[in-house]
Length: 197
Image 1 (cartoon, helix red, strand yellow):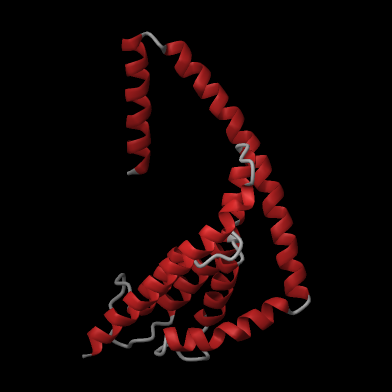
Image 2: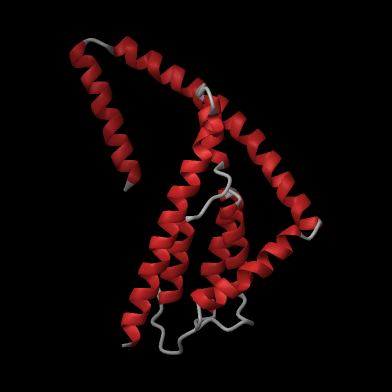
């Protein structure tokens, strides 16, 4: 669907440039945007490499394990019906830790693995295949709301596009993601509680 939307926007833009006589401007903008896209990819590759390296160091030094242990009571409270031995739990914790550290690239594979395990080993015996369970929906909300202590991606974007103080976004981002995460948690708990009453 997105391919059709983007394709339609490009066709309309080109047609509009022919009508208004600004084909040169569109061509220049396309070339300039391509250049900026490559520069941004190189910047993001550097940032990603740095943070993934730090994440690996944290893993080797046991910092991630400590963070995961701190999160386990929260996972137990948030997902009371998922057994402690369920294979999805470890992936869920890894996803949440990576999101908190602002490493969306590391969070995505763990999130996909968690969803796969939740589908492969359903918590409810009467679960209908191809229908998202409460646990899946709750995990998705947590993943999307994504409390972030270090918004790495936004800081990198701001730096790339010449912001005077790229890290000025850190405190507002923490407040915004904290508010979105708390809202998501409260909503999910309310909806799940409503289902059982």
